[in-house]
Amino acid sequence: MRPQIFSQLCSRQLRMLQHSSRKSSFAKRLFHASVRRQVIKPFLLADIGEGIRECEIIQWFVEPEARVEEWDKLCEVQSDKASVEITSRFAGVIKKLHYDAGNMAKVGQPLLDIDIQGDIKDKDLAALTGESPEVDTKAPVKDIQEPLTANLDQSIPQIAQLEQNSKPKGTHATLATPAVRHLTKELNVKITDINGTGRDGRVLKDDVYQFAKHRDLASSSNGKTSSPLETTSGPQIETVTQLSNIQSQMFKSMTRSLTIPHFLYADEVNVSELSELRQRLNKTLSKSPVNDITKLSYLPFVIKAISMMLHQYPTLNARVDVDQNSSKPVLVMRSQHNIGVAMDTPTGLIVPVIKNVSSLNILSIAGELSRLQSLAAAGKLASQDLSGGTITVSNIGSIGGTYVSPVIVEKEVAILGIGKMRTVPAFDEQGQLVRKQACNFSWSADHRVIDGATMARAAELVRGFLEDPDSMVIHLR
Image (cartoon, rainbow, N blue to C red):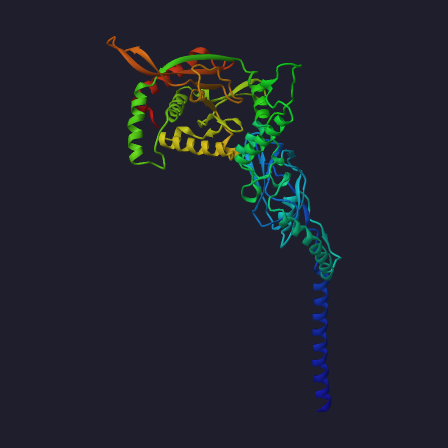
């Protein structure tokens, strides 16, 4: 009996010993498997589409040693076509900014260095930095505490210094809207020299005016003339000024456009009946707005008339290309009517696009116009709002000018320029003198693929729709 009890005790002790050994081995494996990740990583400027290879840094929303959370704004960049706000995909601390405001950043190159904190997925880290994450499998967990404490001690004086600067001034603290930046260029003021009085050091228009005023007063007290008009003698002075992003894009696109052989077709359009229809509709909309639209301009009617014309003359909606197999020129027909509308903005001329106009009614076109105009004024147009156009309208008459010779946009074959609306005397069918609302339409077309007769017939069709707006109802789809 006693040997059996001893045997059972030995077996139980052996199992307990084996179990204890497995727990100890598992604990060791856990201890050695804990790793330290190299979390200070470069944040690359991602490809924002449309073949854009570089962007201008408009403004930074962060500074070195600033903490950011996931999806916080890092900076605003301006490409050739639109401004984009770059956000952070991780929470962490900004360590270094690779560019100053106003510099050109290359796509695929680091924008900043960020000390990423928290859990990080390998695929997210690779997308952020463009490389595989590095893991040090030999560093135990206990080694992490020492550098973390040292970094915290070093950052405390820097945080205190940042808190002392209640009015941030410098390259990375210059927060301003595109309109304010445009004003600084007009007044020849460096935004980095201005103390912003807005929230978080944002530079306001009044700050720019006050800075320019004090600068000019200081120049006058020193006996220096601030206006070139006051110069009465001396040699001609020429100053080199760099083109803005939008000017650079316009320079390149218009240079390519002028390789297209243009021809101009102009005619006068009587919009008296359209004016009366518009007044009746606006009276109704003022009482009962539709989708926040309380007033219609002439432009939605013109855009819709062009789309209706394109159904009968689809070649004006095409683009010229070269066949890859035969190397011969071809026309690429396009099903959607994506009509670009030239707009004057504080940063320059841009052409946002109203997509698929054939599927929109007048009110929908007016709503899309309003949306694009608001975004353009704020400099917030996205790349998709500026791409894909098939034909363009330039309403230069809203500023002034009766006649215009518009330049065809690349990858299109026609463009319409609209002169200002004016009241002129005319004779009716009975020979009586009447008042007429008229404006001039000036069409430019690519003479390589569009002949004069086609352009004349298409222009007459548009004129007919606008002079007799009731006829548009028959052809609406």
